[in-house]
Image 1 (cartoon, rainbow, N blue to C red):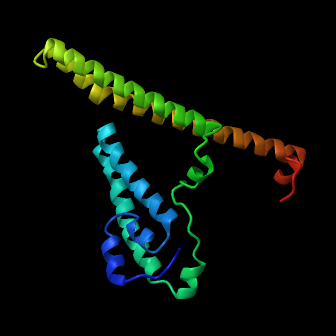
Image 2: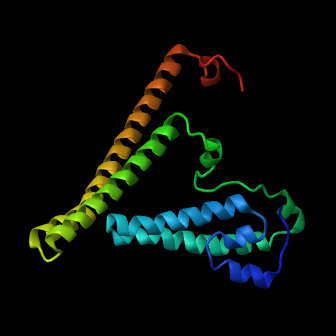
Image 3: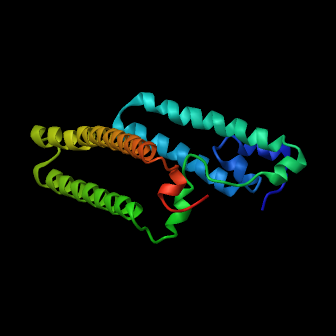
Amino acid sequence: MKKRKSKFWLFLFSFVPGAGEMYMGLMKMGLSLLLGFSLSIMVVPFTNIGELAMIAVTIYIYSFFHAHNIGDMEEADFQALEDTYLFGFDSLEQLKLKPCGRYRSVAAAALILIGIVTLVNVCFDLLGDLFGWDNEYLCNLFYFVRNEVPRILFGIAIIWGGIVLLRGKKAQESLEIKEEESGFPKENVSGMED
């Protein structure tokens, strides 16, 4: 439940991304800021691209000032403020613990990836115990798999995401051209009015 709180505690909580919003009862906003910050921190060691840390810094600064701007709102504006997810995390609410459609595929891919990483770690631990970690070939292979393979996979995923976006844009443009040729507005093509 949203409620005005102490400025002192709001100041302290605002140093943790999302905590200031949660302190005021804006749980969805706070959770999305906390998740966004945490995920952006996790991407840096996974990809080994230090520049991506700027995303985490930006979210941190945004969260600090966002909490204070909400805390300084007039009472009527504060009460009218709707608690919504930020950064597209509103799709999390649609999952309802039963992923379906594309979310089911993403959840399945994440579980498979976690399983593969776990098995690779177990295999390397076993090989290290059998042959010793002073084996040069085993160490090189381990560091390649641990450091370079995730970066390669991340690069492939970024390229694939770009291709999907381009395909989506081309499909949208082709749909708009067909609508212009048919003379029907978008809401009539689907057979439903707004």
